[in-house]
Image (tube, rainbow, N blue to C red; front, side, top):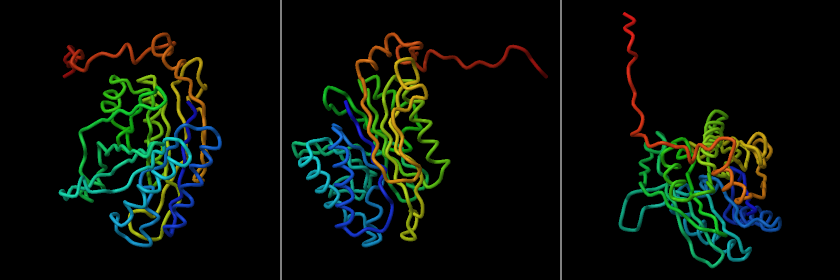
Length: 282
């Protein structure tokens, strides 16, 4: 499967400019033969400089993703946007939209809101969803979610072989937390990961002053894959699209016959005993 990660710019945008940029980056992926393209967390943040209300932009976000997927014939994983759980609820979720070429949509809500998201009263979900595309099972850990091994392990045990990781981090430390954790999840579970960050910055509204990172496509670290576990990487803080071909036959072979096999060698948490040292050092 050929996949693409789009580092999307955080900058003031009109609705027309945002749609044009979104479609242009998706077209780069489609023209290169990608079967899916991933956009970042809070991909709509630049629109808030026009109207600082998330609900104002939900229909545009959804309609653009659906039209783009249909027109280009690929899965558009349209990053995240804040939405109410449903029309009858006041709960707000950080929601990732998956738009399919046939016009249908799916979604994955964030499992682990960050401390500042909790201050925004964003609520978590407990549902780890699986999606099938081109014979591959996909899971979507959103930014902070990738820093929790148990959620990704649950998805991998349920068959996930590809992680799509949209992210927004406002400093270098945050970006590398997400990137290093995504790499660790690839090694632990013998999966691939596509990582798409928001890049740039705004003078307003508050909380989106800066975004750091580089798009990347990650693999396990073993013979048969890239030495550093990095199939493709974009330029730092540049809104570019990176593309890589992922060999799932090689991935499945690695799960069974790799130099090390941490996914198949895993043990249940209950099998570990934490004990105090027998020697009294007092």
